[in-house]
Length: 529
Image (cartoon, rainbow, N blue to C red):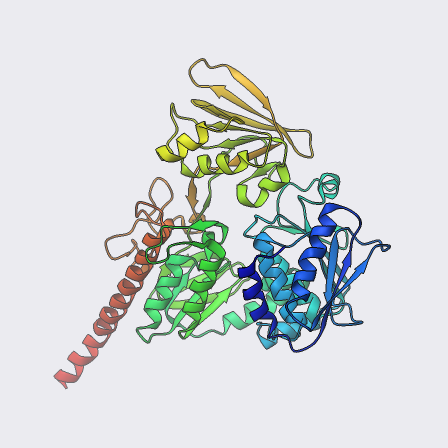
């Protein structure tokens, strides 16, 4: 099951086990059950502390397996064969059950222990989803810490009947005690905030007591991370407040154009960014959303939690999000056939008909990837020709199960009240309206900056981007901006990082000049005395 290189790496990890663990497999005579047993036996062959127990008569999903100490159920189960992006989740679960320390703050661990309730989580994932592992790993850790929490990770592509019954059309989708708990990427802190009703108030109180920062960065993506590093290196009081550290990079599958890093994945890159920032004295305040900026001699950032952060200078690096088409049915059927991440949600549409809207690089790449999974892809492009790189267009046109429709204006996404059943588009040349039957629509039409909360505070372009000068300064003195949220052209990670560094240096220069100006009147008074 595992190749030689992977076995060698896994063997090294399993040497860190300090206590025995049991892998209890629930299997039948299916090929997938045999594949799972092969994986588990491979793992057991690499460590004397790992034992495999086979069960056939229980009521668990098949194939599935639990990870626990002998005679002790930790509440961690995988339904499926956790390879792909979930192999890391499997390895971490093995290590943590086997005694390797959990990497969480003591306060967070205590908060998990004190949760008052019985929680049974079911997390539907796809093995190609780069967002799913964070949710799986968070819930696995919580189950390990609190015996009243149970978590099963379910491969949606393998358990299609459940996916159809529950109308799951986006991953990760988490059920708690039989009801939908959440969709999309989330970590331990986000999950705790939903389970612990008092967590938000306590966090707001702690934030409210923060001293004035020299520089406060709003946003934790590449631009925000770079700004934090460059500010902290100046020895000034630096803080970062963000909804999620990593930003949109977390939703990026492959990164192959960041200079000096030949190839990596978005989540791995985001983790490296956070680790780099944490190597400096930076106050990171995550799972917090900014709602208003109040400029002044000391600027204020008002958060959704009710807390107010204060700083002498601000760097805005709130990034961008996927642009919506803005047609009837799009929001109504989001996560019920309307999707924005082909890598995450594509496997849920295996053997079905889908559409991709957008003929740029993202849209064409999505169509190519989906063509290997679904029965047919129709790509719609508003303009007369595709805008993607020629090499991608050639690949797309070589695929037999892809139809390309240009000069097509999307009018509506239709559904039956529960899920998508088609798309309506208008031929821009003839004006004729047509309906195409399908079950999934993947929107890939670019980005929109996260600046709604800044309207009326800083100057914005007609596209909603923050207008900045050569130093990253905005129209408000002491407020700077960087990355995809600004007017800087070419939205690329490497450019965002450079712009973040530049904005931080601009903010530091402003701090120095402001302190000199404040001291000048006092110096003159002393001279006159």
